[in-house]
Length: 216
Image 1 (cartoon, rainbow, N blue to C red):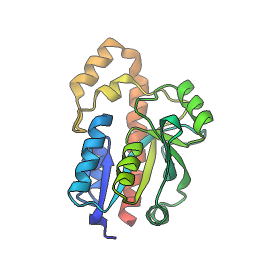
Image 2: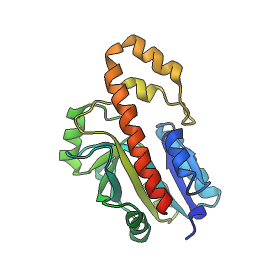
Image 3: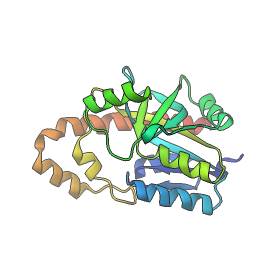
């Protein structure tokens, strides 16, 4: 399968900028589940023969940081749902990702922002990371009998809190809304250290993903 046959679903534009180096079939959901379904379906209608969930994610397991890369073995969802990733596509990604970890990804319908919530979700699911797109990719790919895989870096460790300002700063098309970020910081300036740490680690994770894409 050629790279151009792959459709990639991301959450925001910085992830998409990296994904576009692999294929032109890239969509952003803005971390909104309904839009993720809509845009994944559009990728299929436009000819994608496989789907990949791509970008950064929150760590659920300990000892994962911004230099970690995960190629999922499966995607888990609410109510005990579980979708195995397609072996050949996952192996292709894993071969390009040095020291990639193999494990579960939890696709969440809502943000999982606090260390306490992340640790409980890890205990419940044994998943390594959590994001807000992978369950959509799994469900849409399964519906259309297409292979799918997950390639993710880590933006925030299990002990890091995810600040509201970061999620508020994503528009529905995945672009940045800095006005929303500033307003959120004005309401709660104590978010700033966590926000700066998140931006730094997201940048590192995206560089890790960019290196994998270059090998692909």
